[in-house]
Image (cartoon, rainbow, N blue to C red; front, side, top):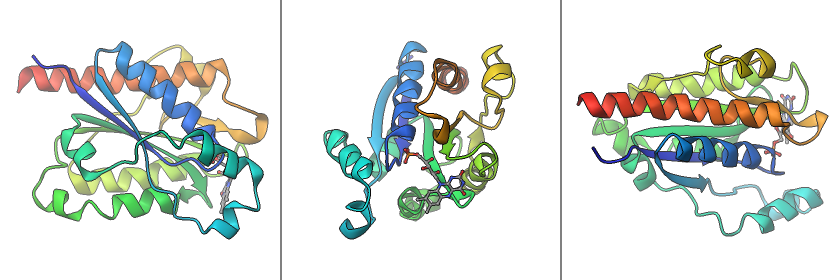
Length: 200
Ligand SMILES: Cc1cc2nc3c(=O)[nH]c(=O)nc-3n(C[C@H](O)[C@H](O)[C@H](O)COP(=O)(O)O)c2cc1C
């Protein structure tokens, strides 16, 4: 059997979700997947970005990360999406990418793949779960197989979010516990996609 193809597609303004995405990519690779790590296009106006030095810096630091395309979705057996919380919802940069997927959806090309999601917010009760659930609405419409981490590993009792790896950015950069949870989430999603591919 060919290895499972895993696409990690994320948006990050100031680096937190990017750090989570890299840990997710590590977990997917460790589980045996061929991995594409992809950012979505930055759509914010330059005037907005320039007001936050950390946003400018992150854009520069990740200039070499390829931008996500529809081909990445078509190629993937499993897709893990990352977004910062925006008022308890998905960032518009990631949503804009999702809203270009109509042609693939119409062909049924997004159905039957494994999907999972991760996020960050600034505060502990700032909308992580609502963001992940909102992203999940898209997966339902695609006919996706949603694979959340649940409490399937002891790390989940420490990281604490069964809906998807989540970090409180206001507490500082992602901790080892959160990065471990991100790797576990990816491993579980890839393991599920591998089992599905083997039985096809
Ligand atoms: C427009 C906007 C809305 C936001 N809404 C929330 C929110 O509802 N709750 C929250 O805790 N943080 C909120 N934040 C903070 C971001 O979620 C936080 O900065 C982000 O998770 C950091 O991820 P990043 O470093 O990958 O950009 C918001 C930030 C912006 C710019």
